[in-house]
Length: 117
Length: 109
Image (cartoon, rainbow over all chains, first blue to last red; front, top):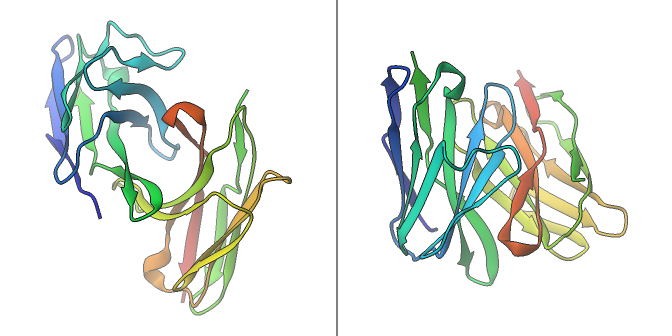
């Protein structure tokens, strides 16, 4: 199956700093990637849809100026959490849709755990 | 609005069969995913149903009824390693997928 990687896998930062998370599709091209956030014992919440070569589409309630998304190539999307605060501490997961034979599926990266102190 | 409902928790015994139900009311529908997620890890793909009916993959089967807005995931011959959260997710139009809150399954010996 297709492989999606994320870097870093975890990060601890001070309040007010910015953190960049990378999401890469390793063996396929992804024109569209998705960024999710998951708080403990809760499900995945879609934050935004990242489109290669164009602006990301943000879900209602997600601040586009705080969560900057750049999809500069067919294999890389980045999420930058600007001026991070403790309430931004969460598990951030990216995904990309791909075809597995004739079946569509969505492959997830391993996630990035962010802790803002 | 979008709504996906599944039970919060279920408990079953090793070797048994368990069925996790999911009902949905969404503005669009392209298909329905089931994912498995162990604590602290990203979800892993289990199944994707587009048409009505049952699809079987080894110990796991998934059923879909589009007219009823209903799906279930069936796990047979339960093993301890099946203890995890199971997420029901609906693929909407425009490549967007939304997730239910997940069902935490506890498998006991």
